[in-house]
Length: 345
Image (cartoon, rainbow, N blue to C red):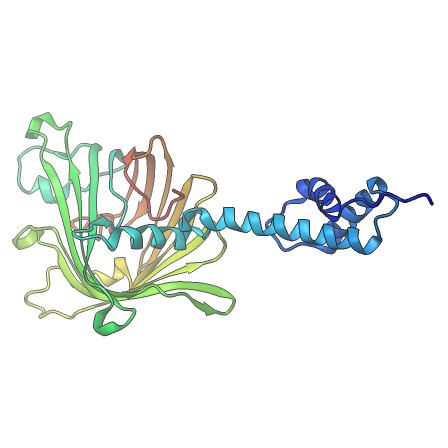
């Protein structure tokens, strides 16, 4: 009696695994993957191997490949698996769990900038020289924040304090000993909740509410300051596109003490910033509608090392600084930044 050789079952599994190996995909196994595996297996399997055994072997092999790939994906740092807004929050959350943690708030940068028409009026009053302010100057910003109370009262709310200063330095103005033209100081305390919410098909990546003070540290006629209640939110449109929204209410002051009663005409009651981060670029566009005037800003950055990014900024409109809140200007700058509003790490 002639015996037929029956291939071991593990041989069918091994054959199916080899055939299925190029089919790895991040999505669950599709019927077409199984069909392709079956067709190849039938063409090469032993005659004694049943269709049921081949189907089972193909399904098992494909499931194993899918599982292995899931392990690879989930072993990546969490910020490499998320949209650009969630990515920043994930990185910051890891850092903020450590004692004495300090993270970036707004972009930290230093730029060489050129203005089309600097505001001369405040400085012509203080000197006998006409046009004392030069068109070119250095602009730099330092912006940090730190947690002071995580999970308030056992909730998902965190309290943060932040500090931002932006300086305008007439570095090349030798005639006046390279003075600092102005510095704006902006401390803030906020309560935030960065849980995600779905709204009309968009993902709201949390919100914050806080008290914001901004001033230029000067006195008398050149003093500029205001206090605001400020709400913020981030909206994720796609993995690489988000919108940062801010709305504020100015806390009223006595008319005698108000340094700049018409600020709302130029700063309005909020602003919107679209942030697009394709590959490792970050491109932002800010629109700030005042009640009478509108301003906008465009920025671009790209990493040139693990620490620094090349950073370009264009501004057009009012309110570029507190001293110039009612002065229309155009400015372009380029330099180095340590971070951006959002970025791929």
